[in-house]
Image 1 (spheres, protein in one colour):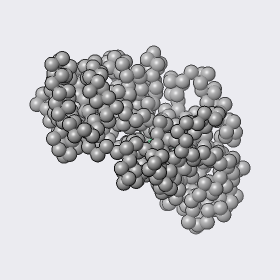
Image 2 (cartoon, protein in one colour):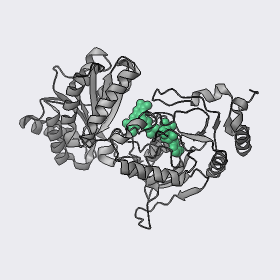
Image 3 (spheres, rainbow, N blue to C red):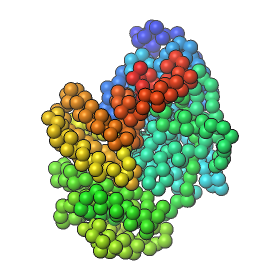
Image 4 (tube, helix red, strand yellow):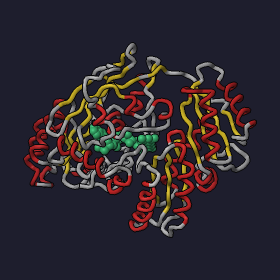
Length: 471
Ligand SMILES: Cc1cc2nc3c(=O)[nH]c(=O)nc-3n(C[C@H](O)[C@H](O)[C@H](O)COP(=O)(O)OP(=O)(O)OC[C@H]3O[C@@H](n4cnc5c(N)ncnc54)[C@H](O)[C@@H]3O)c2cc1C
């Protein structure tokens, strides 16, 4: 290896030289110590340091890089903030990374059209702040907002806590620019709300996890920012009561419901007692807990919440509750739900399932999954937390850390999920970790169509090899 590290893989040396000619020294990293931190994402999947990290500054540069990689049959892993949880940004051997680090910044905020145009590498939080500065709001919101990029959230069709109110990322993107494997640039950065002139091609790239194209720019849909919110925690007998509670809350607040999050008692007890990650504001233990946040534009949200509480108690839907009276109190209620990030570290070896089923079936699904897991000697403790209105549960199942146990538990849960017409991933994507299980959600015909699309757009299979599909 020379001082640049380029000779790590001599088969691709010519390609790396050509790539560095496009980018100049600022745009390419090839030293092993520089490349090592790009090996993987937050999924914990072990990755390999890429042969080089390419840091283009324009769409045209991305086009040139892709064309070179395609010519040389060199695999490309697109990377944003590397906060992905499914190993989609984790590198297999002998690939280069194209990072959006230098494709960053807000291009324009159009207050009249209520849109924001941005480079793909801009962190989600930067976009949220830019919109808020003019009284508007970008409503996709996830815990990793400080590091996750717009390109990454588009590539994974990220969800988060506001899906109930504003939909997934797919519902919040108006225009998109992407570069195909052969370097072709597909650019449609218009702000047209209505456009029926043929296929809406942007949807092909949204949620495609970097296997169909590299996203460079996007036009995002904004909403008016409502400055106030009100937050409450309710204790209920069970999940069925939580669904009734959601209906009653919808009757009162309609589209003002920002979040409606559910916590099962196993999660609650782990967070409040076992790991002591947050403090319960309730004196007793209950069968289910929901955290509700609503827009409080009217300034009457607290009063409205009190009326909601009275209604729910009268109808015996809820049995206890706390209404946040200050921002600090609201934050401490949110700490109970957001502790899920720390639970990941505190729960020992586990699988974090990200399952989607019909919202009305979620409670029954979780009961059935619990019963099934109780019969599996490989499964340890189970905890459940999720987005109730979206039918999305994060089901964490502890095990002894062995691959065999992991595989046995996954096989059991994913096979069983077929009967519920469910999704093996509701939010985080297939990536590399869930690639073996995609067939439990999608029919052979659907998979054949996905592969045909992939082959058409990327015949040499250079884009994110090993993600989404096993080969
Ligand atoms: C604390 C925490 C909380 C989270 N909460 C949520 C949540 O509530 N909901 C949710 O959906 N996810 C959540 N995630 C997962 C993660 O943040 C999202 O998947 C996010 O969208 C990834 O963005 P990123 O920029 O980090 O992408 P990366 O991790 O870098 O990449 C993710 C995938 O997108 C591809 N990709 C990245 N950039 C591009 C591009 N420009 N063009 C084409 N493909 C690209 C990569 O190849 C990879 O397949 C959470 C993660 C953490 C760590």
